[in-house]
Length: 165
Image 1 (cartoon, rainbow, N blue to C red):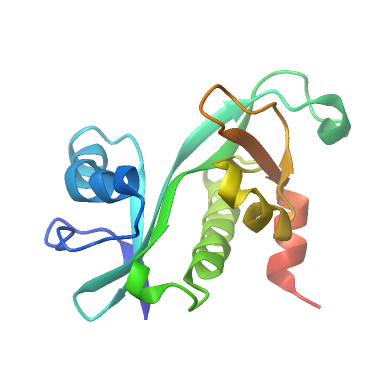
Image 2 (image 1 turned 90 degrees about the vertical axis):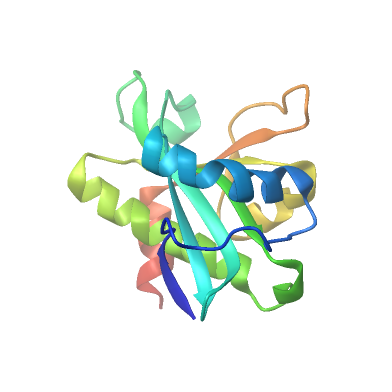
């Protein structure tokens, strides 16, 4: 299975993760956002021509709450935002969500070298909070009116996870 940037030639029309908003994003907006507006980059896990999973990332700046700041400045700091992530329903249970998250951690480590990064953020839906917490994410805001809750994991923790025992 290959992890790579979404290309203009990728067929997104058959992707179905069971979450209509994510399916619509990949089918209708991912290429436009990436190639025309340059709002984020969508990465895909593919087997042959088939998209098995996708991850869209962009930059986000935020002021970390005191317990997480640990000597960092009190102004907004750069993070890698996991904007969207989905696994095709035919590939559920294969560990692709965890693989995408590990790939996002690798992208954050690249970002720190390019333009700075203190960690990774994700807006977790109520049903995905446990998934993110397994990888060290902690909530940094109360859930919004839609139930989304911003989570953060520090680059220090990302490095520890990616370097392994």
